[in-house]
Structure formats: structure tokens, C-alpha cells
Length: 375
Image (cartoon, rainbow, N blue to C red; front, side, top):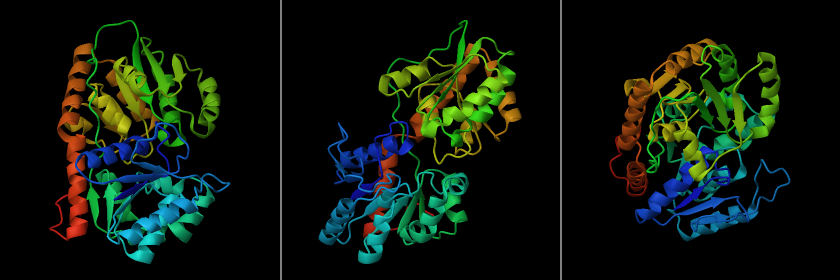
């Protein structure tokens, strides 16, 4: 089978991790998998990746006639070849729909957050044009959608799609290195780790911090991640206006340096306007770090598992929740962290995710009884 995603080179983007790991676990199970991307000439790509040059002058469009021709040739060889497309809005996400119309091969669509209300209403006029001219018709006849959460399932249904939808979360690699320890120290750290992007609600966090910084002088706020479309330039006037203190920005961290950020922190926050999954939440929980996030993410069970807090996004709610969490002693923070770690081990293993995806493909190919996670 063939998976498609425009790029896997941005390590701070969720699909760069989750799509690659999904392919790896499927290959480990015995499935023959190729992953097509536009990461032309990138170094150290996995052996199962087939990369193509982005030929169009406007790189956001991502046109590659060679990718299209290669996909078409593969389908001609095997008319039952499953194409699994991840994300939307670029030409590699449109080619599979064109080919399904032409050849009738099975197509699975994983929107990866691109069909959220926030995503649909934000962005350039280009996105709206692409949606009506190409993207909607490229996915409307999919055999099945894949949603990583109930929130994403609802987003698919809200847009009117009646296709079957499988709800399968992303998996998470449980960190097996140094154990997270909470201990008394002069300075504690509130961590945000992810893209520095308008969608992430960092302006709300910074305004809330302006009310917290004098009340909790033993805490620092650290924001780690790549600057997406120069969004830091939009935040700088706000930072100066609010006269913020002890706010530190850092470039994106990968591999062991990323895990060290989690391990050296005392509380994790993701104040997002929209997330289809939120892999950084799962990573934080997996090392035993309590989490504060919003109901715009699929993590409402944080409170059910007593591993953190999930709030309606507003400055006042963020301020009240963070203030409460930052007052907790080390023992309570440790207990919350352990609850989250145990939850991740139970419900978010890559083996479980791979097994469900294999059942989905088997149902598509063999017309077996529909699995109970497909609706």
C-alpha cells in the first residue's frame, strides 16, 4: 500500500512523527508500505520513503508530475492498491482523489486536523478556492476517513461527509530514559513545546502569564519550538506592552534535547484553538508531566484520569487554572504525572494503533464485518 503526506521534514509538525511511525509499525507487522512525500534530496529519509521534487514555483501548492505519474503506474499494476492520504490542501493530497475517480482504487483519508473549524476559517483565499475547485471532490468518494479523535470525527460529519470514519488515535513512544522527578527547587518551569503559530493560542497564554508572573515568582515560562511564519514578530509587541518577565523562547528541540525539556519542567501547557490530536500532550504525559490544555483539543479525559486540566479557552480560565496548578506541591504534581504516564501506556501504544489500522485495511479489501471503531 502507499501512504502520502506532503512532507515529513518538519519534526515539530505532528504528521512528520505520526505518519512515519504508523508506516514503521505497519511494515513491522508484515505489510508492504511506501510513503510518498515532497522531501526531495532530504538527508536520512527512511528507506520506505519515496521522495519527489516540488516542481511548482509556489511551493505551498506542491505540484509534482513525477509523483502523480508514479502513483498512477502503481495503481495500474494493482487496481486494489490502497492509497492512504494524510493531510489536505496541497497537490499530493489531491492526486489520490483524481486517481480514485479514474481507476476506482480504495482511498483512505486522514485529515490530520485540516478539517477543523479553525483550520477551515483561517488561512488565505487560496485555501477556499482549492477547497471548492479540487480538494472537496478529491476526498468525497473516499472509502473511509481516519479520525484521530472524536473531535475530528465530529468535524468530518459537520462538513457533511457521510463516508465511514474510523476513530484511531495516534500512538506515542513511551520515553524509557531518565524518570521524571519532582523536587523542591528555587525555580519551577511551565513549558510550552510546539510550533509557534497563531493556532496555538500563545497570545492567550502570554496575557494570562502577565497576571501570574508576580503571584508566582518562583516560576518561569519557557516556549520552545520553530517560529511558524514569523509569528514571534506578532507576539513581540504584546510582550513589550504587558511588560512580561521570565518568559524565555527557544528554538525547536529534537530527540534527547526535546525529552530533556519535558523532564526539566514541572507543568506543560498547550493553549490551542484547534488540535486533531496534540502529540506534545501525549509526549508530556508519557514522561509524567501534568498538562493544562483546552477543550479545543481531544484531551477532555485529562481530568477523568486525574492527569491534568482541560478548560474552555479564555484568558481568565487560563489564569485561574494555571494559578491553581502552580500552587500544588511536588507530591501532588508527581501523582498527577504518574496517572498520565500509566494512561499513555494503557491506551496509546503504537501496537494498538497498528492493529486497528490493519483491521481497517482488511475490512476495506475483504469486505469483512466492519470493526467496532468504524462508524
